Amino acid sequence: MSLPLGPWRLTYTPGQWLVLAGPRLVAIMQPAPPKMSVLVNQLWTDMQAAGSLASLLEVLRGYSLDQMPDFAAFVWDGGSLHGLARGRISVVDMATGQTALDGSGALTWHEAPLGTIRGLRVDMGVLEYDALLHLPLVVGAVGASALHLTTDPDQLVRLPDAEHQFPEPVVQQPQPVSEPLQPVSMPETQQMAAAHSEDSQFQRPGAGYADEPQQYGPVGIGVQVNTGEFANVVGGLVVGRAPDAARGPMGSSLMRVPSPGNDISRSHLLIEPAGPSDARVTDLRSTNGTTIQLNGEEPYLLENGESVTVPIGTVLNLGDGVSLRVEQAR
Image (cartoon, rainbow, N blue to C red; front, side, top):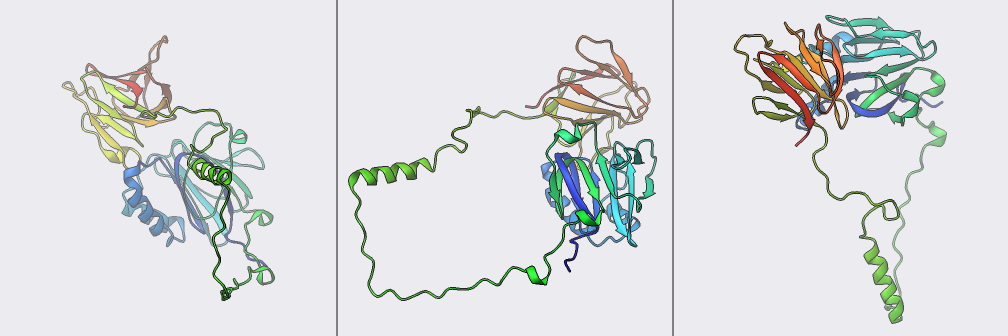
């Protein structure tokens, strides 16, 4: 009888959120920049020893990740599925369409036993789930925008049983050649055709598709401060008069801005990429909030931990005469 590869089957839609999957656990966290590659690989290795949510949280504390604003994890423990979430992550029961676990408003975590639910969809934002490509995930790390988890026995990935194991490869012994092979000459026209065929292997991949631009500029967003500073936004950017990287996702960058009157909080605002030309702006429970000015629209106040997605050209007024403008990356 074939054995399941694990207690669940995972599929994901590509995106920016970091998903670390093991045989019996999966963690979802905010995007990480490329410079964190070594750390993420080590974190994934250390997570594999965790057999419960409690032990997984101990691993995260060792990396100072237990205070990450947006996070979710699922562990198969004691023959049942357990989950926790915090921040902008919600978990939906695929059978009923009802929310099974919601991280919003949690000061620590929202935790729930999920043993009776066969199919879950984990959303990291608003998207058209059914219109996106769904890819399998067994063990490893991927960038995702949504995750589907099922414990239905009929859908589990299974190892081949003994009767269907792949046969051992047979090594063929070389046969002696009685006479050396002589080169065969080709007519000149055939030689030219062969040369042309070899050259064609080095043509631009995708020949036959529509031509694409060959010059690639910076992709993503940046922030221009009215005092002159500019920073590209990769992963996360914590802005304030004395910003703390722990208030943003793993590997966040810092932008310190002046605030003579202390109107700007120490960690005032978190800015994250939300697409090639959009930024996600989150108030970090600042004292006075941030005024959002979209092109051609009335300004409004972002406060109390609220988040909003804004396009390039948006101006963010922090107070004390300091404003930021969302621009294309440089």
